[in-house]
Image 1 (cartoon, one colour):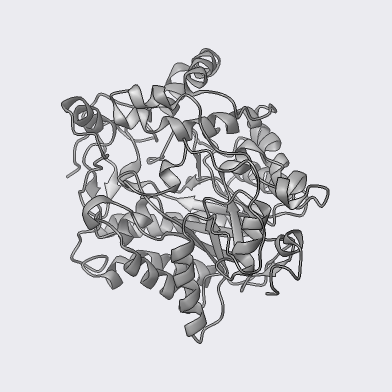
Image 2: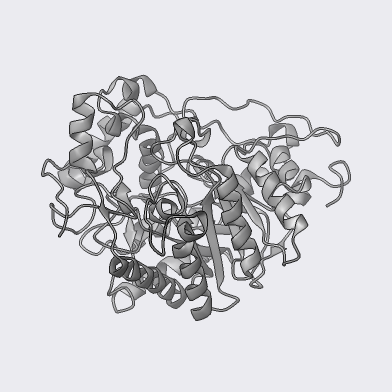
Length: 483
């Protein structure tokens, strides 16, 4: 791409890009997947009235691509109360009509939109999902979650009730999960979406298979870096065979797990996972992220209290602006692409971008092709149209607001880590629920006030639903292993 001084930052961000499948995105800005927490039992279908508000905002905001919030493929295992679910009847009336209505509003302004398909694996808390109280979550191996700093007896007790010890999956259960992911792709296709993204990051099930921390199997699906990729390879291959271009197949991957003492996925193995996706010829874009619930050093997961910038950095031809959290890993990915002989796969870098010039620098330097905006899309839903792609806003002022969450002292004071550590992200869930009700986001809301408002919401929407949102559905029945 031309040097930074040759073209404007807006021109860089507004440049279209065509993915390998032939899908053309009108610009480089992507609305990242964020869980909306708006779906309702018993089916957890797309909540059309709420999505008519929320997704209409994003569709009119001039994103090049919208990636939906997580859609869970198994109604028994949600990651949080309110997840949308692709269930066994989603291709039937009236459920499919709700999916089609979602696709229409998300693509209503000509915006491209793909569906993120996910399974939480061992991160599915008791009570989140339509499963018996004694049915444990699933994982490649029976490795429980160990939150950093949660070593007290109280924390261990609560963790045993919330998540417990997951069940190591059988081969039959792995086959069942493959079928559910494929069913999710069928529903997305039938509804009129432009494609799907497989969620292989943040400690969810596919990420659990890819990490040596949670995958301690010695069969076809574990025991070596190559075998740890077997499930992801199978999903990519089978979905692409069933849905050829122009249907988009995207994958979201961790660059690393960022755990203490060198545990979990390391960047060297993460690069090999990306290498296969690039050379497979079946993947249209790759989103890079990082971390899981057990991480200790991920900038993405430790950024709720840091103010970013008041003014955009100066754009210079000789100096790179490295705003993104995972630029170093993305650099290595692009070196893989440059050294290979296969076709180019666009990279989406998500996390850390705040300024127009920082985003443009990421593209112009070759570190990324697409800019992922997650929390910014919640606090400022119309950010691309209002600011980033608006020539009336000078580069110096074209920045997203800081994502600092007020009142974190309250979250830090809660002795139960599984509750307190989740309140930062709950702030964004709360604001998406506001958008779903036709209200504006409230970026100045503090965590204590958020909880007060959620109590009020409890009186309107039911005690069980809101408590599930706040404390990840703590259930005091012990999880038991299945035979």
